[in-house]
Image (cartoon, rainbow, N blue to C red):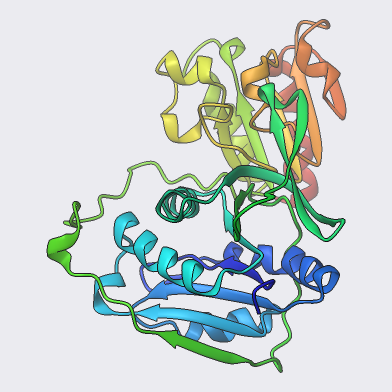
Length: 328
C-alpha cells in the first residue's frame, strides 16, 4: 500500500545490527494510526535471517534487494537500490537510524528521488493524517516540527535510542518481496578494498551508561579513573570536544554536535562545563549526573543530579561504593 510505513534494516559483516529493529516499534504505532502496514526493507547478499527477525519485531512484510554486489556496504550501491525500492512503492514514510550507514543511504536516496529529508528526528507522530517529525535545532535549545506536504515518501533519519525496542514474538512471520535490481561495479564511483578497524573500540551510541570527561580533567591521566568507573558500571567512555582537541583521548569518544549523539540511561559528566555544543549530543539522556567544581557550570541546569566537587575526589568515592555493591 502506498501509505505503508517502511523501516530500513542495517547489517554489517553478515550480521544484522540489533538496534536496527528499534524503529519497528514506533513504526507499528504510526502504521496503526494511518491504518496501513508496517514493512521493513533490506539490501544485502542474503537477507533470510534479517527478514525473520524483522517479522518477529513487528514487520508484516519485508522488501529485499539481494546480490553479491551488496555483500559489503557501499553507500552508492545501497542508495541506488534503496532509491529503486522507495521510488517504485512510494510508502508514506521511510525511517532510517541516524547512524553513518543510515544517514548515507537516506540522504543519497532523498537526493536521487528529489524528496525532502528530515535528519536526526527525536519524535514522530501522525497529526491530521500526516506524519509529523520533531527534531532538535540550535544546539538542542529548540525543537522544530517537519511535515512533508508534497512527494512521498517522507524520508527521515531518527536519533538512535529515541524509541524503545519492540518486544520480539518468535511466532510471527510474513511475506518477503524480493525485487530484482542490479548495479555493475564498473558503474560505481567507489570500490570497497578493505575495512580497517579503528584501534579504539567504542560503541557509545548503544551504551546504557556513559562516563565522560571534559577540559577540567586536566590531561590524559584524568581519563584513566573515568575509564575505571565506566568499566565497573559496564559502560562506555566519552569526552567533550575540548578534551579530544587537546589530544587527551581519541575522537571516537567525542560526544556533541561534532561528535556522537547519544541517549544512554545514565550519562555521568565529569569536569564538563556544559557548552551548548556538548549538550546537543547528550541532553536527551534519561539521567544526567554532573560533577563539577564550579557551582555555576551551565551543565547543572540540565543535570538530573548535580555534585559540586572535584571529580578527582568524587569519582574514587563512587568507584569504591560501586565496586563494593557490584563485588568487583
